Image (cartoon, rainbow, N blue to C red; front, side, top):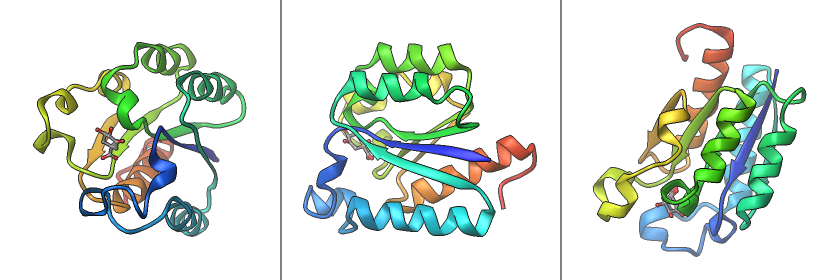
Length: 148
Ligand code: DQA
């Protein structure tokens, strides 16, 4: 089972970007933790980050036939991107939306997600653990059993 993990814009700055909100872990730390959990769960993962909406769209399109599930933190594109939503719908690969911060406790514009209605589910507010829960969730969905 191969899972694609996508990080959206500005997440390359994690570690120094608003650490009170997003934590002190770097993207490298997060990707290492994801890789470790993937090993424990017996799945393979590929982690990618882009600041460009079109590149994320292309990666979702290209996932067909290569990845069985997608975990994505669309970052600011969560609140703006019809293109990412359409890409997820077009490929039909199970997708879990994750956020480091709890987007529902922040500014009102962050409460709206264009992606959530086409996701299997959304995990928001657990810092780096949101990604780990997202990975467990997508694996559980693909194995059709409760997350463990
Ligand atoms: C974020 C929340 C978004 O609103 C914000 O634009 C981000 C990060 C999060 O992980 O909490 O860049 O997706």
